[in-house]
Image 1 (cartoon, helix red, strand yellow):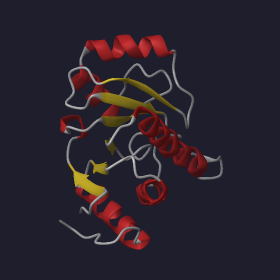
Image 2 (cartoon, helix red, strand yellow):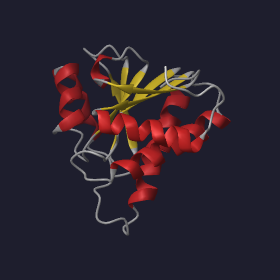
Image 3 (spheres, one colour):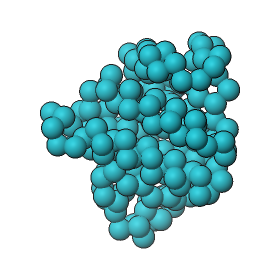
Image 4 (cartoon, helix red, strand yellow):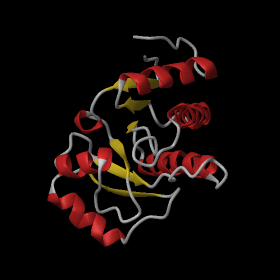
Length: 180
């Protein structure tokens, strides 16, 4: 699915040639499973070296590093919440991840950015809810900011892709939105 500024993509975030990709990191920023491990492997050892200098990142916040061996020039690391049933501020923390990543993108003058499904893997955030938050935060940001040309929401499975497309359709945020 694509329109002029918002794209939902099924594939590998580490292969995208964008200004920045977002890493769904853990608080140490030193690599882990899922997309975090894939980004660290694809970026090479210099990413880990730089992450060590950052001394971690609290949940809901974001940090910037170089992209090293990735096609993307930069990595924005954000720590999503672990799902604990929804009554522990998880929704607000996940929204904060997106807002803080967008703030970095805006400060750095990035024109293109790609996000994985933050917290929807090992951290157990219900995928449908994670998709709704991702789309809402993206649409809100794009509605008030013209500095970013394209935001790509990258899905890791057919199910995730369908749920993200549904979230975009439900939000009906942008003109000319459609599958393409």
